[in-house]
Image 1 (cartoon, rainbow, N blue to C red):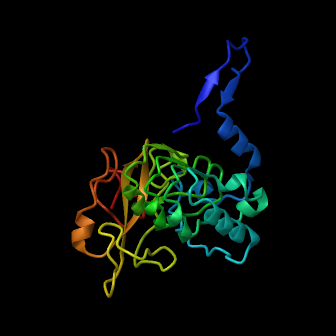
Image 2 (image 1 turned 120 degrees about the vertical axis):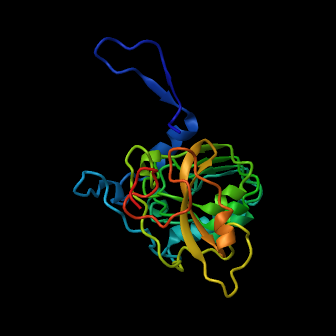
Length: 258
């Protein structure tokens, strides 16, 4: 979903029209650090399309001042309806945050999660605990290529804004899905993405799927505890590879080679 714009009057011949963006986006755009995003979109293969990227598994520095400021903000935001870290954490520290803490699961009153222009590489599966969430804004977060499957538990989520060309399997750039094999400890949730039961002695099985989330179609990473739970994942929307898959080689579109 693109930034909503309104044209003020008519532009003069040969000059671009004058646009206005909403005040919340305008304020966020003034705060964010624009450099330092990953290079996944700029990596091209022999065909001119993006080559298969590596999955971001960087480890967050939890001793960093920005991380501590983020934890304090979460603790102070238990009853807040809007959670916008960039409005509180300074730009330099915010740009060093590559994931949100699992502690966001206490934000049961948060209806708007504003992450415009972040340098996030991933969101934690605990986002699925935000029961009041109705609006998710990750626009211009160019290093965030996918969402955890657990976001489907946010049943009230209706409005989203994403830079779709930065997402895996998108129609515009066809950024390939990274190949999956075994579950990576950095990304593995505590419970099955589908049934929400602990894995116990069962292995977590990672799969990619594409689903409609709010007003966008987004790639999701699911970790399932069984073939039965994998089968419960809905088909992707028309125009995308229907069933959960392991990625690689541009998989995600129906005409891609498996």
